[in-house]
Length: 322
Image 1: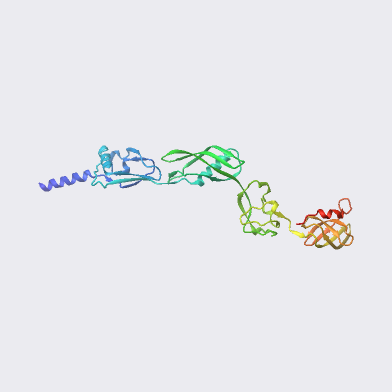
Image 2: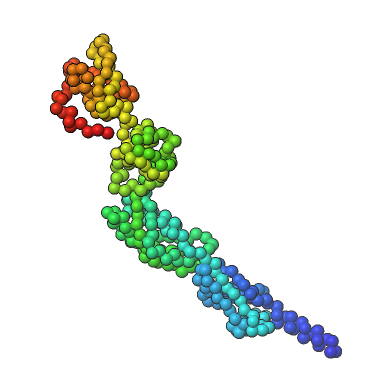
């Protein structure tokens, strides 16, 4: 008889402990349900208990509160000690500043601005969003001053299971362009080769119209100043390679119809291939126009009217050297 009574009490105790406590639970939203606290919690498993922690936060439910919840919803569980507790955590991560920058660029484009902007956020306190999924970002109420490149806007953030957030953001929007940039440091007077360049995304700045935008504009040209690695090149940085230097004796060929005469002249100007420079006959001291055709070589030719163009000697003082 005593054995039978003990067996009944054992079965009753087992029935009373049919549910088990979930000591650690990872949430997937802001709400806490009965099933998040107990396994085998019965017909009320899907009962909403209330809001839980925010993304990246946790809450701890102590033994006394667990006992009260179990009694209220008929869960077959009782705490064994005051040390029983359940930890509920919703994993989170800071909102990516890069994702916000993409949303700002989209908002600027929606205003009809077709420029490619590099966005720099200032004093941006990244809110925490759920680790799972991709948050929805909407930038509105954009105020953009194109003169100084500063912007301000309202950022709305949404995510599954999270209350929507809205915060003010601001910073700089710098127009960018695709253009050739130097691979390494290029010295002044260097002749630029194709292997010296790569395509890059660079700030347009106020000199956008002066930026060399294609390889063809640069390769074979000579630099008038040093250029650092990764720098864009301005058209004003480039000149045709100097093939004829001012004050140097160069080989000249004079052509008039079938007549061709070769000799030496002195270059009054410096010039590159195809450029017209002034030269002086070393015997007659006559000043003529000549076209540079090679290293130390020019061709003196009549103008369209058939007469040679001459320059009075007094103009020599106005020549600027390279």
